[in-house]
Length: 255
Length: 162
Image (cartoon, rainbow over all chains, first blue to last red; front, side):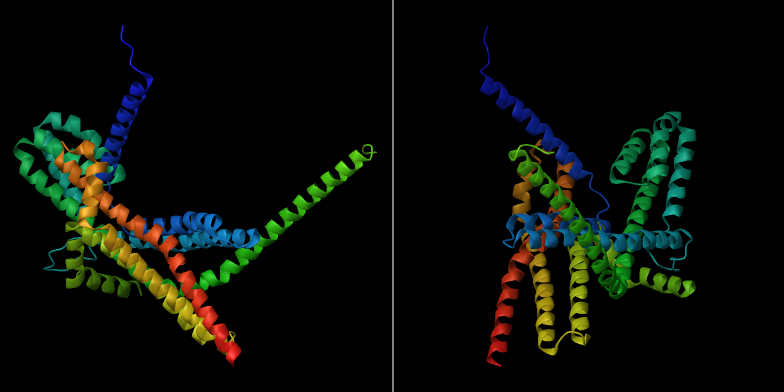
């Protein structure tokens, strides 16, 4: 009987783990979709809340107290910034979507369309007609349509729908593919418009946001400062009582 | 008021510039990445410019300190913009990205479509992370701090001379 050396087994194991990790990473990166202002806001938040404090704690040569204050300052500012920027993005996007779906962003003669609801309805109506023609499509597509209604169109869902159409679309293959492409294009048009509008809104509101930050930030910091002072006092008290206990103990125990 | 906003938004959404811009964002990931970086940098630069303006107008800050504080903000703002943009240009380099993706997504080589999609996603994310997380939050303070101390020393020397 031949026994593989342990190192060889480990090496093969590592290789297969690495391969599967690489494949999974590749699949994840291939599915990346909808990169916009939200990504920017999240990265900015992570930078301020995690990267800056970590860098300060690791690199800064200031004394511990100053270092801790500087490290704490940034996450507080990050949370405040996020709490102001995220609502602008969310509410602004909703507002633009509402206008687009009510056809209020339509201009006669314009080639670009933002009405995602209309594009989706057009696709679903052709899809339903195709399902009447082909029951297999209805059976296989029900889950995808449910997903579409719940979560909206995504890169992976578009690929799944395309595969379904190409396999079972029959006579409806061409109009269905056309409607799907149109739906996807409208979805992206609206998404990028929402991002640009929210960016413009954030720029316009910057003076207000700065003022709000200047007003709230010192208050939050002084509140946190008071809390940390209180906790330091408590720590001191514990230390004193321990010290007291020790002294008493060396003198023959507490009475 | 809402009618006015609606009309303005309609004009904005159907303007030649926005239509062209949106089409480019959909067609090219590189363009989308640079757009996002530009929006991020411009928000920072605008905020710093506003701070400089507010400092200059703030009468509570003593006159001799005013220009120093304003200079500091201006230096940080300019450094942020330059460092972020240059990092993103460096990270988006075609040869560098191709080299990393070839190594990172070697398991997807049998599926060229997926490999291309993964490479494109990686390029966008790595450029944004590099510029917004690493350059802005680590490199900028490292560069801006010596400039700040240099300016501070110069300011102190001037004060001593006077």
